[in-house]
Length: 424
Image (cartoon, rainbow, N blue to C red; front, side, top):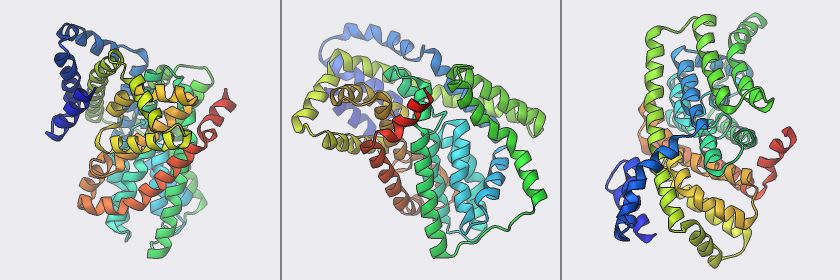
């Protein structure tokens, strides 16, 4: 498949959009081999890639997150986080990470997290005296938590590709997501004490109760999603529908902050994002099919084991490869491109599929905040008006923390597999 990877790299360097890079790179080996009759199957493979019921979860969870933004509900979460940790030195930095944990449990998308949290907290942190590059970098890196904890869209794609239980994948992402949050909060505390960042003023009991009461309906949403799935009340797709209607109901009738114009904007944003995701899924399914015809997964397994048969060395090689891929490709395209190969490698190593899925997703979502193409860093750079290079430089220690968590997840499978086992 040298022709495929050469074409892929060439089109990517030329600046062709990734979705068309996947299609063109798949065309090249088929045409060079003279198998042009296989091109007739391309439309069918595209349709088969997106004709899966579970993929309906993607627009529904995205809509729930967009409604949260449109109805200004994100601010309720941030005020609640301030109540919990804002009184510590560097409290706003801790609020930033904690808000990513909570908001990520609703939208399932890192980019949505970066936009929603960044628009509110980055200006607030700058106003309180935080270094603007630190504020932007922390927002960008902590937003990747939203793509690992439930309801992670990347986990949904992994479940579709690997035939795994999406509910188990959701639960398997909880511990790694919390580890990322704890690591970033610990780093924030150290930086806050070194640079003398301020504390927030304490609040009295009446104010505290008011904040909790305002935040309680939205705090129930992640519990409804995960509890409903694990309790067998509804499937992941039904959970996504419930989340959408619940978010719409509390924004419109409880908080009364939702206007019709905001609803139409949320629908438009959801449709645009979903269209882009589904197009990538469709094109990448062609690539997976071409890989299967050419026995690429098995060839890749043979090549890896020809280098070394040491399990730890192979896992480290996979991590390095995925970190590189994640730095240049968005996670969904990268997942569909690499999972056929990695599933075969995982079988050869005797890996638990849940462990493999979490490890792969964690690698690729770290790429969302990794230069040179980290989309979350570009988002926060635009919001904060801080040069991208300054944001990337400030993000390096935080990325080091993410990689430490990645190594722990890689070398200690129980961190991602124990909780699903308990709940099952």
